[in-house]
Amino acid sequence: MGPKKVSGKVSAQKKMMSIELKREIIEQNEQGVRVADLARQYGRSTSTICTVLKQKESIKGITPAKGATVISKLRSSLHEKMEKLLKVWVTEKQLKGDTLTQGIICEKARAIYGDLLNQTPRTSTDEASEDSFKASRDWYDNFRKRTGIHSVVRHGEAASSDVKAAEDYLKTFSELIEVNGYIPQQVFNCDETGLFWKQMPNRTCITAEEKIMPGHKPMKDRLTLTLCGNASGDCKIKPLLVYHSENPRAFKSHKILKEKLQVMWRANPKAWVTRQFFVQWVNLVFGPSVKKYLQENNLPMQALLVFDNAPAHPPNLEDDILEEFKFIKVLYLPPNTTPILQPMDQQVISNFKKLYTNHLFWRCFEVTENTNLTLREYWKDHFNIMVCLRMIDQAWLSVTMRTLTSARKKLWPESVAERTFEGFEPKCQWRRRLCLWENPWAW
Image (tube, rainbow, N blue to C red):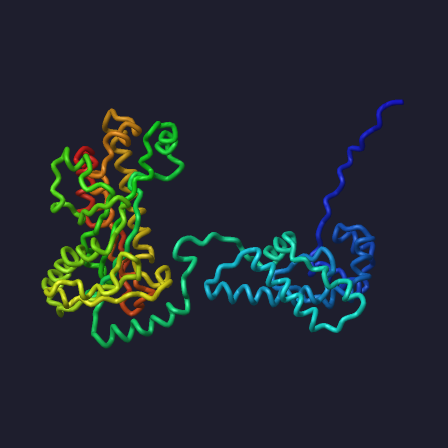
């Protein structure tokens, strides 16, 4: 007996029919179109068309939840009502900024379904279906597809932001500005950020080389910066920089005087900004810079410093400010509103880091083009903290006035005036960059 012949036919994939399509078929049938003609028109079997027509009363009565286009089996109106209420609840939670997970949504779905079931007159059939809804993973996946809910990861401060507190604070801030008569030139904002100064995007040759470079892990070398500027965008304060080394090797070899740096240099083992460092920066850098700026521009001697309630910011900072800078007032943002109201978090810091990376790429490009060093050799032996400081200075100078002013759009919309397009960098910055390109070792 020979081997069995295997049929070459491949079973056709089951085609799902949307609610609209089923209603269209029912409507055409009621207008007199025959079942055979409907089957040929829609590419379905006659048995499928007949099944749809048998269920036409149930199909007509379906009110699908928002976003539902396909229903594989006819569910009770209880399921539809539950999903509608659940979608409203999810939307409310998202507007409040609450964190939602699959477990939370499924638990709420079961609770809503149970409440609706208790409000519905029960029959023997209902008793049997009381435990039919399990809010399983498959149901959750289908619910997400129907309603357009996406799973996202919330990072850092954004996960705990208080939208209502931020909205309430806007009125308080506006009244404070109006009562004291502050203008954009007098309102400053500062914030801290970490910078992995030797870090490059993951998909680069240097990153791949570092993975096989024994004992050399510069990616983890971090420093912390405090960036500060005013609402008009024409006054940037010298940053505070905290590193883990008080006197890096590069300082000793180049005989660097810290007082001449474009940053205020401080150090501790964890490279964190402390209250002591912050107070020193306010009295030694921020105060003198603001006073000089106000005098040069013939502005009233008053200033407002706005920042969040981070641990590095003393709760009674005004008591620690020197007598000659008592014209500076301090304003703390409400807890959990930093990602919403903090101006420096509105693209200023991210823009600064992008500019830093841009300078980093240009530096690597010039070294490989104009010297005999490989990128790996330069990265390990020549790219030190001094090069990093120059690039920080370049990146901070490159942050435009438009970026600094537009960052106040949420906290102080009245201070954001319409400005013309800033198309290019000032000529002086381009001249400085061209000089560095011609002589890459000028860094």
